[in-house]
Length: 344
Image (cartoon, rainbow, N blue to C red):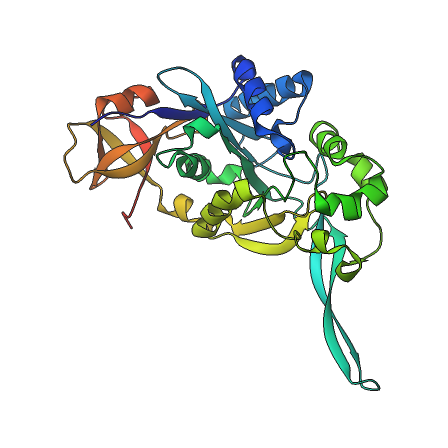
């Protein structure tokens, strides 16, 4: 039985070349990677500092993780966790509310959807930045990469907020056109979607506060193409949406101010993978047919590494193969975190 193919680990400045390649592949609308070289270098430096931090409470930490293909050393994907959002920079969205309209005089009663600008999720933790290169989207690695974020949080939960949110990429064409942006954002910001998307990634977002609509927007006044994509994710994000639902996230009736994509949320301690992650001692062993798919990780945020591997869990001990220990840079007898599929 072969060992792990990938390791999920802290990203840092040494990964610059790999993330430049990911940026080219990801395309328009993937804000986390739409950075120029200077902004990308700053993002990777902040990630390295965040993983090295000894903080006991959530602050401005940004945990950006690389999916490394062990055999080639290639950066095959990424994901991230922001310990706190909405303080710097601010975090704006549209809340979708339903307004009842009625008139006894004409015998009419109907509902209308309305968009209202909010920053309700200031002070939450955010998970996001989930991307895997197309040629590596096999064997459940996307799911493992997504779950790995919650294993990281299980290492030291006090370093993350009680409420966790995730923005899903909205509907954007291959040419970088967003129907929602064309109907709403363009009128208020007077720029292309790609320019606004890039600015949101590399600035403090003051321009959003300055230019965002100050009054409610009635959805029925928008073109049909825009109405249809409110709260819908990009087809490339449908898998991520299903994974969030499996973890316990629900749609919050809040959408992205640029592309109309959905924002989902869950209480931190209700997230399935986080709840089911256990602390164990690792034991090197030859694995038998009863082993199960697992995520195995180092026990603290500093030096964090995580792999998808086979394991057998028994009375606080997890048996794994030598290749798993090597990928984690741990020895037999070391403490670790583990999530085992169908173990609960």
